[in-house]
Image (cartoon, rainbow, N blue to C red; front, top):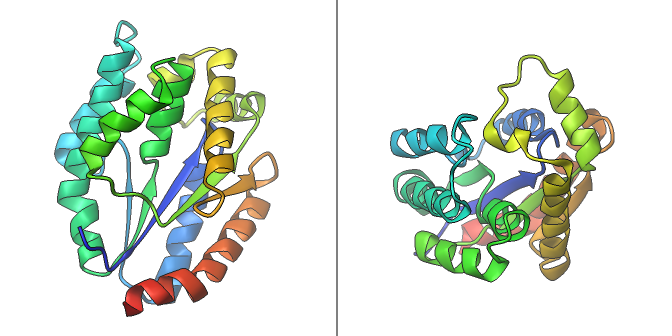
Length: 219
């Protein structure tokens, strides 16, 4: 696929503050007066949202790790076909809450399926599409889980019920990806107050918008 848009993904462990940061980024994109789309994974469209309800249902504790990885990939494939790829073709800036990196760290690393095995599944599901920029909100698992416990309005999903050791493996996986792909992945300290994180995210976007997005949209 030849993309004329700009694909940004937001990643982070549970309780990193992605939802809050995305709201602030949405405001920034509106100010830029460029066409944009904010979406999420798994979900974003009817079929993928139905798959999401199966994956994250706390009652589905018997779900096999391979089943989980395949369901995420299936939802991702449909989401790309219906939403992300058409938006990029139209020259839009697409901001997606989670993408392939989440599968690599949650199923590949924390579930023990192997990063390369999960990467292979997702290469097929995505046709090799990769983000132009990934913002990784790095939070200590203890901090993230304490935020979840303190947020009475947040829906508790199946992944929230995993052990602290599981969430530590998730973080280790993210940091490994960031070390491998420093040009794509920007690591932001999300242990700080979210206001500070938002300011750093906006600064990264301003820097990248001036260079990468301008170049990409002019091609």
